[in-house]
Image (cartoon, rainbow, N blue to C red):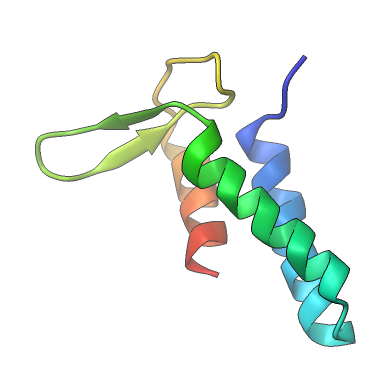
Length: 77
Protein backbone atom coordinates (compact mmCIF):
# COMPACT_ATOMS: atom_id res chain seq x y z
CA UNK A 1 0.00 0.00 0.00
CA UNK A 2 1.22 3.52 -0.74
CA UNK A 3 0.02 7.06 -0.30
CA UNK A 4 -2.34 8.36 -2.95
CA UNK A 5 -2.78 11.80 -4.44
CA UNK A 6 -6.48 12.20 -3.57
CA UNK A 7 -6.16 11.71 0.18
CA UNK A 8 -2.79 13.45 0.37
CA UNK A 9 -4.01 16.57 -1.42
CA UNK A 10 -7.28 16.71 0.52
CA UNK A 11 -5.64 16.29 3.92
CA UNK A 12 -2.73 18.54 2.93
CA UNK A 13 -5.11 21.40 2.14
CA UNK A 14 -6.87 20.98 5.48
CA UNK A 15 -3.57 20.85 7.37
CA UNK A 16 -2.44 24.11 5.78
CA UNK A 17 -5.76 25.74 6.63
CA UNK A 18 -5.59 24.46 10.22
CA UNK A 19 -2.00 25.66 10.50
CA UNK A 20 -2.98 29.14 9.31
CA UNK A 21 -6.03 29.51 11.53
CA UNK A 22 -4.43 28.19 14.72
CA UNK A 23 -0.80 29.15 14.00
CA UNK A 24 0.16 25.48 14.30
CA UNK A 25 3.60 25.02 12.79
CA UNK A 26 3.42 21.24 12.94
CA UNK A 27 0.21 21.18 10.88
CA UNK A 28 1.74 23.59 8.37
CA UNK A 29 4.86 21.42 8.08
CA UNK A 30 2.71 18.35 7.44
CA UNK A 31 0.73 20.24 4.79
CA UNK A 32 3.95 21.25 3.09
CA UNK A 33 5.09 17.62 3.19
CA UNK A 34 1.85 16.64 1.46
CA UNK A 35 2.54 19.22 -1.25
CA UNK A 36 6.04 17.82 -1.72
CA UNK A 37 4.57 14.36 -2.24
CA UNK A 38 2.23 15.72 -4.91
CA UNK A 39 5.08 17.61 -6.57
CA UNK A 40 7.65 14.81 -6.47
CA UNK A 41 6.09 11.54 -5.37
CA UNK A 42 3.47 10.67 -7.95
CA UNK A 43 3.99 9.96 -11.63
CA UNK A 44 3.63 12.96 -13.92
CA UNK A 45 2.87 12.95 -17.62
CA UNK A 46 3.95 16.07 -19.50
CA UNK A 47 2.16 17.02 -22.70
CA UNK A 48 3.55 18.92 -25.68
CA UNK A 49 1.49 22.01 -24.84
CA UNK A 50 3.10 22.24 -21.37
CA UNK A 51 0.19 20.68 -19.49
CA UNK A 52 0.88 18.08 -16.80
CA UNK A 53 -1.34 15.32 -15.45
CA UNK A 54 -0.57 13.29 -12.34
CA UNK A 55 -1.46 9.74 -11.36
CA UNK A 56 -3.19 8.44 -8.24
CA UNK A 57 -0.09 6.79 -6.76
CA UNK A 58 3.67 6.62 -7.36
CA UNK A 59 3.25 3.21 -9.06
CA UNK A 60 0.32 4.18 -11.24
CA UNK A 61 0.93 5.62 -14.72
CA UNK A 62 -2.62 6.76 -15.49
CA UNK A 63 -3.42 10.42 -16.21
CA UNK A 64 -6.24 11.64 -14.00
CA UNK A 65 -7.53 15.14 -14.66
CA UNK A 66 -9.58 15.63 -11.48
CA UNK A 67 -6.67 14.42 -9.32
CA UNK A 68 -4.36 16.75 -11.24
CA UNK A 69 -6.67 19.66 -10.41
CA UNK A 70 -6.81 18.68 -6.75
CA UNK A 71 -3.03 18.39 -6.60
CA UNK A 72 -2.63 21.73 -8.37
CA UNK A 73 -4.91 23.33 -5.81
CA UNK A 74 -2.66 22.14 -2.99
CA UNK A 75 0.48 23.28 -4.80
CA UNK A 76 -1.05 26.68 -5.51
CA UNK A 77 -1.97 27.04 -1.86
